[in-house]
Amino acid sequence: MERKGFTCEAVEELSAYLDEPGWMRDFRLAAFEVYQSLPMPSLRDEAWRRTDIRPLQLDSIGPFLNGNHPSPGSPVVEPPAEVVAPLLAQETGGILVQVDGATVRCTLSEELGAQGVLFTDMHMAVREHGELVRSHFMRQAVPPTAGKFAALHAAFWRGGPFLYVPAGVDAGVPLVSLLWASAGRTFSHTLVVLEHGAQATLVTHLESRVGSGQALHNGAVELLLEDDTRLQYVAVQEWGSNVWQFTHERARLGRNADLEWVISSMGSRLSKSFQTVELDGAGASARMYGLLFADGSQHLDHDTQQNHNAPDTTSDLLFKVALKDRSRSVWQGMIRVLPAAQRTNGYQANRNLLLAETARADSIPGLEIEADDVRCTHGATVGQADEDQVFYLMSRGLPRPDATRLVVAGFFAEVMDRVPVLGARERLQAAIQRRI
Image 1: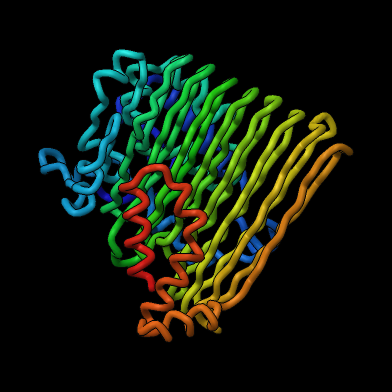
Image 2: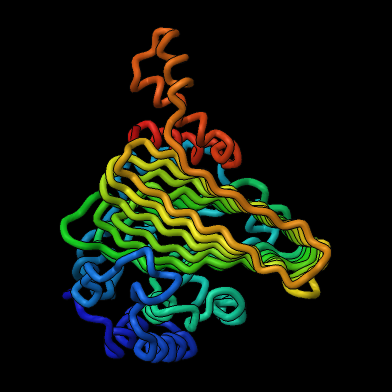
């Protein structure tokens, strides 16, 4: 379908094409009004002053209205076999494969289905489980008012996984989602809802090849954990180097809920990500791990928030970054503790490894403490590869490239070990080797 700009007519056309219920169409139109009312982020905004998006020609990219169907009757585009094959080779509870937001494969084990687990694409969820989705979608975690790109996402979102686990169900076998981008613009939405006492593991992959011209991914992730739940969520991002990525991601944790959140960001031309954990219930705990590796002229900007809104909560963040060539990373983190959130334990750390003198890492940790019985600390380091370690390995007969590769692998090992799915871990290891 011919590319169009971001307009009210395009919103209506997208909703009609997807055969959505009226409430979702109205939601999109209201979000587009929010988008139009908000200014484009600029270097004058504190959250954006280290990330220049002026070269992005947003209107020339436009929305993608009809998924991966280039024209009526044309064959569905399939992702490359070498990308899908590793997903099929591992044991999973279900697999969702999408191209440009359109589903080409969706499976769920009979065992999980019999227990009431829902794992499908967002559009199917809207049509078949409308009330469940409507009560959670962009209400509790990422509202359209979260920012200019959050509003644009709410108006034009397309595809992404929906995972619902009923109360008391342990969906421990990993569920895997792959979004392959072939058309140059994607708006995937991830929504996870765990009811009281539920458990799950979800691994998402976001990938594309390098294309011509600018491409866009504008995504959102909502992780909603009720009391006594446990979620392992892993997101692996390997966009092509022409992709501009903007994401708003937020998790809300009830009483004694437990979240392990691992992200890997190795692709894109520029990435700006807002990642937030809200510890709403007493006893909630969250661990956030990041693995970032940039080269060329890549720019990766991650803004993290650990918000302690209840007493006896714990958060732990560790982001590790390796940079080559002229690449740059920005990490800005904040631990916030409300007055009622006594006995909070919060920690954040950012470790940066520079593999070239022309690379640059900016680390801005922060604390906002309004309670008096807390333990909150932070730290950040920037340094080059340890030449003593490299020399030691070379003295044992390894060439310098191999020695450097081992040093970098060791640097990332602490985060890599947190990836709960072997297939995803192997994929990340291979990506690191290619970068080095």
